[in-house]
Length: 127
Image 1 (cartoon, rainbow, N blue to C red):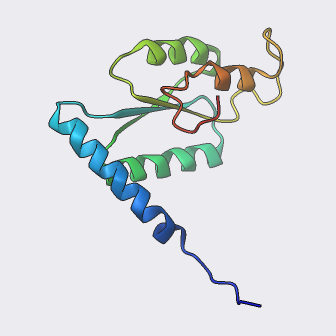
Image 2 (image 1 turned 60 degrees about the horizontal axis):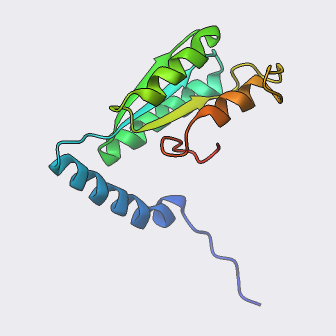
């Protein structure tokens, strides 16, 4: 039986990040700077830290990153604005926003918001 080998996440991600950087360089050569918008609608320490790390990763890869702090009651409207903004290329929501609060559309409100992000802008692939 072979021994297990510890694999560093940075090593596994390196070729993918290199591909991403090349794609971004190609976009920038066309005058396009990719913009990722992250919505924070809570004071959750974990969500805030996740947003900080997202910003660092984006900076390292040449992606512009904006954290938009919004009141959770305005999140749906602000999300729709970002969805329809052609300068926004990717969207993330840092959960929980409403927790298990039900939605008029079925499921939880967080589920509804997650599913509202179009696949073209859903950088986490959750929709």
